[in-house]
Length: 87
Ligand SMILES: [Zn+2]
Figure 1: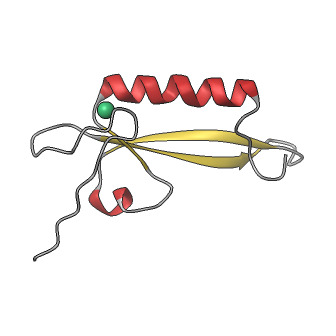
Figure 2: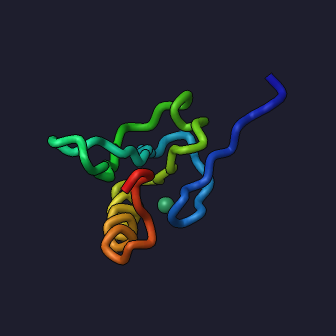
């Protein structure tokens, strides 16, 4: 294999090493209970190479950057910068 994927952290820009515990985050929109609204949902999951290739995935180099990413995500929804389609 001549081609090697180089992942970088979406928060701090760090290049992925071999022995680090990376995480993935992905945003989804889930219907509310009565079906009239969509609710933003943030999924956090242990690193997976296949999912890491997905365009929607955010790459996080560890718990510190996962916390930072969550803080930003929450602030953006609070500020109305981000929203779910259909709202
Ligand atoms: Zn990072």
